[in-house]
Length: 98
Image (cartoon, rainbow, N blue to C red):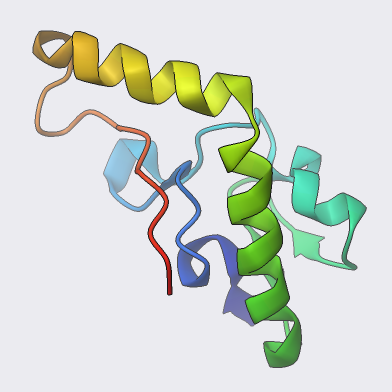
């Protein structure tokens, strides 16, 4: 199984302790990527066995978030309020190209 969220470096994927898993949707099954691809999910992540699908999901995920107002708002809030976040706090990541 491929952890799609980790491999595509989704900006809302939390990899540590109490922030593990999807930080955007209450349940990873609500992920916007499930609309375009047959992905499996559990409470924390979406995953697949199809390695060829992953690259196209990275492109689609980046496009989605670059157009998403909530993503822009979350990044802006973090940059304007750094004192509200400890080192252990989940922070939305900036999208990075492959």
